[in-house]
Image (cartoon, rainbow over all chains, first blue to last red):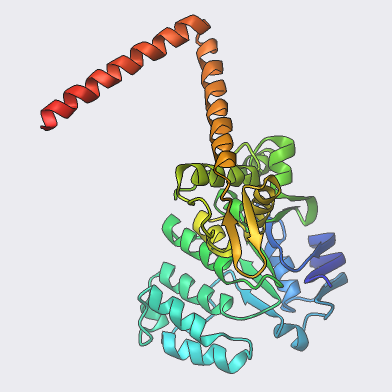
Length: 231
Length: 133
């Protein structure tokens, strides 16, 4: 069964159409890049998959389950903005995730935090932006979920931190799960993706594998993106 | 081992080329076990499925083989590795000849230049060797 499935999905904010007629299937075991310029509907799609928004029309499901109480146990979500309580220490964050998610692999998270030299006593608000992003990603990737939805996981961090975040994603995702990464930093993520979905003004304009694009067009996904979305 | 990728070719074919390089140069020694797909993918910073595809291709060529539970190994067939080395060398030579032809050199001139360069390099190394003593 598809890890994520959308059928004729539409979302309107008043008169503005954020997503129109999106049909999409994402199979388990794939790492998929959700790519598009600002305002193309990436975050809207991810929020719909999390049940944070409701569709105007059409349907969306995670492993056959509609977004809601039952889908939360299947989905591990990294929001665009830091959503963890900043007064907590790293240790308290581990307790928090352990309490909420039965699939949380605490020992894996502890190991990654200690590898980065983040002490369990350090408070989130004392962390730099990069460290905070890493800590949050560690929590998200330490769950044994069926679908990981990562909204801009590498935005606003330095290139070394980007590499760390991407290798954490490759090293930790469960091969029976699917990973969706939304970003516009394509050159950085290209090598870790199986497939890409190009979104433009709420519509899917391209769906292909990374190596198909490179083989057929003789250019990188980054170069193709620049061509398709040339301003 | 250092992994580098260009933008104009599929990633899996570049992985195949680089693993071949690693086998020929001894980074992945003859008959030895290869790291797991996930470890190789993490090291190269690529998608595990893409790494898997590259290894499957190498397996089809016979350069690596799987042992059901023990993992993947580099072939023990030294003749096959020598052949891959020759193929890689041929590729480099072809690219070199093409670039030199574009610069306007004839075959004979290219060979003469190579010999001259080789002798200069040898002399340089000899001198360097004596000063080091």
